[in-house]
Image (cartoon, rainbow over all chains, first blue to last red; front, side, top):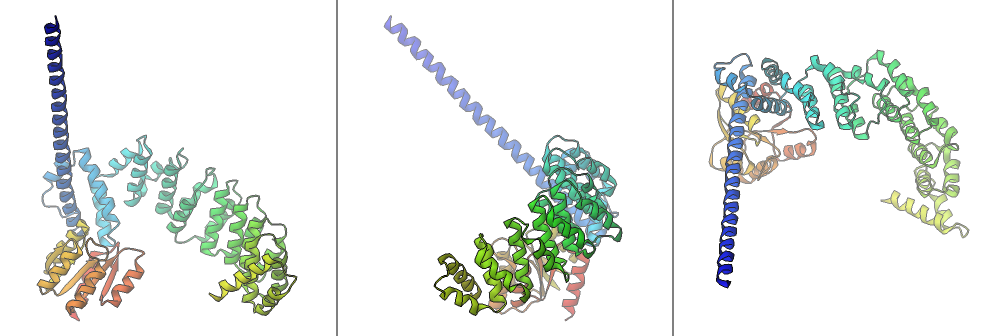
Length: 358
Length: 118
């Protein structure tokens, strides 16, 4: 009986060992086959990349119309993965070349109808695919497909609508900002910077639109418009920017102060002083910075008051720095030596004087 | 005229090489700064076109090596936007000219011709 059960046990153990061995062999086989497959794919990509690069190089140097043998290339162009790689290489090369070379790269895009590849990506569900398609059409300056990009301006994901916004401005210039009129979603700080960098001039006819954007219910649109006014120093908007000092959103007020500083006129500092008392501390800080930069001796008393009475230490420090800049260092030394001066005020003044010295 | 091109971007390297060969120049290509320095040591180069950012040794390191080797060869630097400080450093080290990417190969050719006539 014991012998029989031992024999069954050994038999089962043998079967288990065979099964484990089989699984291990199967795994090794799978890894080898997959590795070989990846190697073949990578090898094919490398060969294709060299082939595509040669095509681009020839087009840049000789012109895209001078093709001697198109048969192999046309055969490869039937494969979607090759077309996709071709487009990818064109977009990458576009960043490196300008002048006639840039035109030839664009000619290749048109000649081989690579817009179809980019448009295919626009119909995908995944955000990164859509973004890729928009970027490709933008890089290749495919203005004829702007309506296709336009439909993503109000897309549910921020990264997609941001890319569509950038494409509109990059391809249409100032006119591309038309979406701001009805745009209700937030525009991130980074995207605002990107849009500002992509625009080089504002047409004379654009003032009406700028005025409309300042009235937008979307705070980020108003903030962006103020930055736009600042970048192009649109002096005609001075009074409208001044009104933004009383906007319900603090973020808008901060930008209004900074924009007024850029548009500085005879009345700017007076306008800021006028609104000072009614502003929250964040805005008061911005105003004090502007007044300090103005170095106007009319505000000596104002700075003295801020230094002595304000509750925010950063404002008091700036006020002290402003007084130093206005040549009132002796007044501050006197303040330090006065027995009645509080310890906190002494520290603030000393800090401001140290900063100045360094 | 023998020109050395040091550039790690394959497409840029091939395009410049193809363009210069078509114009009748002899060309040596290297894909990193270390190989470029070795080539400068061992070959009589007439002009160098080099990228600033490269593996193993940068464009400015190539210039520094040339100074040590006492090689006076005209150098055109290729730089990207935002590398102004490096470009200034390159001029201090003896670079003759520089171009910012994206660049025009035709313009590069004009600059090469201008430098080779000096």
